[in-house]
Image 1 (cartoon, rainbow, N blue to C red):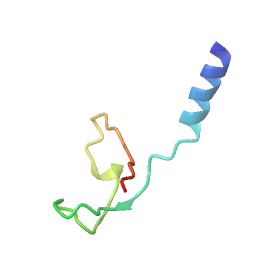
Image 2: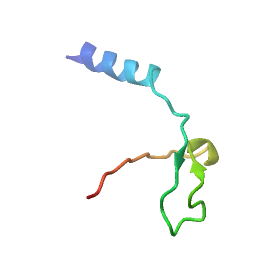
Image 3: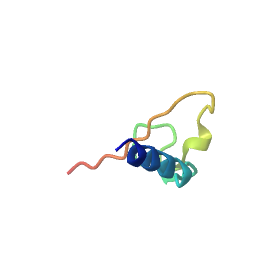
Image 4: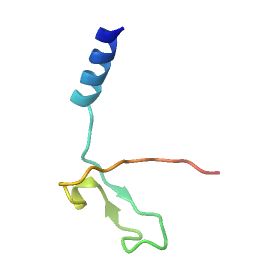
Length: 55
């Protein structure tokens, strides 16, 4: 079990894509209708990326 968890965590880190851009659809945001991504943020901070879906 420990080997499987180690393999899963290692594989997810090796094949992760942290460079992406998405259109900001939040009308109250200063970057509304512009492409934003993690490279625009301060790289000395830890960030959490959540992609939710609401109906």
